[in-house]
Amino acid sequence: MKIFPETTNVVKKLLNFSVTRTLNYKKLKIPSIHGIKVGLSNEKWMSGLITKLTNITEGKIFWDVGANLGQTLVKLKTVNDSWTYVGFEPNPTCVYYLQELIKKNQLSDTTILPIGLYVEDTLLELETYGDDADPLGSIVSNFRESRTESRKKWVSLLTYSALPESIKSEKVDVLKIDAEGAEFDVLSTLEPLIQKYRPYLVIEILPVYRLDNYQRLHQQNKIESYFQKNKYCLFRISKKGGYYDCLDAIDFIGVHDNLEHCDYLVCPKEKRSHFD
Image (cartoon, rainbow, N blue to C red; front, side, top):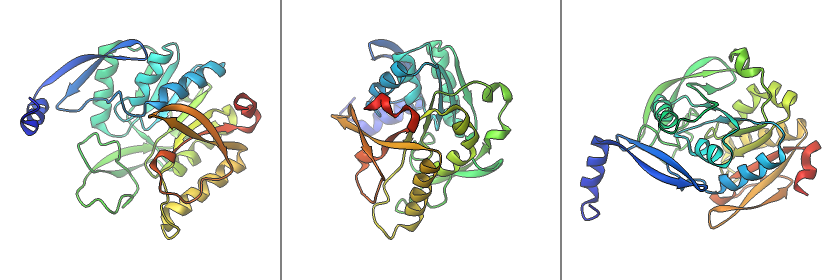
């Protein structure tokens, strides 16, 4: 089949099937639906970080803002399946896949909300650049100006205050945000949660690249000010061979172009001693 890769890809998109894979010494059934499937090798470092956080955290609730195809979900559930997972995902293609992934593996205490989090209750266009489940999809207009071919779909976004009380009433212990340029909007609407529950934050902040990239630099500055205002300290997640290595305390993110330096743990200052 490798001799004819284009033919193989076409066939995969026509067939729906599942394969069994091992992650963190546990078996998983990975559905492939019209060529779309979760990649277990993506963000390999996340398993190590989740292991560290679940070992030091008394609670057991994990919110994942930007669940995509379940890259973080499968890592959490194979590290510690006693944790409750709540995933937010506005892309309907990804939501359907997530539900199939959950059903195939009979994952308990797992909720998928088919929405994004935002500063207002609205509909916005999600722009994707590859297939319909593209993890680079963004609601931020022209976030990736260098990419010329894209497709758009309308998606639903809600504020934190609009969420059901049954979702908001439980203490959140770890909050992961991967919003492809909309991180500050997510942080803004979740400020009541962050101030009340003081969760650990795992967040991707993509590089500014250069000083004249004003839009990204402005957003990054606002995020850093937000952390300072809410008394959070910043750690860059260091990796070795793609796996979690350690946490490097930093004062600010700065202007850089290194995609290996995009992932951060943001810790309430009162809990910083856990990482000394």
